[in-house]
Image (cartoon, rainbow, N blue to C red):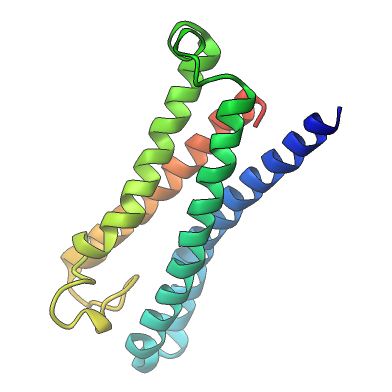
Length: 162
């Protein structure tokens, strides 16, 4: 029974880390940045990169926590067994969850390159700091895709029981 309680705590950590990440996406992109853009537009280029770097550091650790707890869940539910993974509806739903999570992780790690944050003058670019319309549209699309992928992984995860 002790192993079951440990598993429940690990599942709680897994879910909490994912919710925290999704909450940050929604808060930063749909609330904080628009408010800053409206209240202090002249300081947005100064504030935004600092906020984004801080959030990306926290999210990096959340990803490590999500992966570690996810690996525990794979072991606990025996999804490492290809017969379960490939030949059961539970395994198929898990693969769909994993696919959605991989989309989210891929966006996290490639977004700085896709939006020019790692190019010349990258210190001035972040979630909306660049004024070009194309960059704004790319950033919005990436945030919406990341949020949708994260919520899809969460929904499928709930159907799996963690």
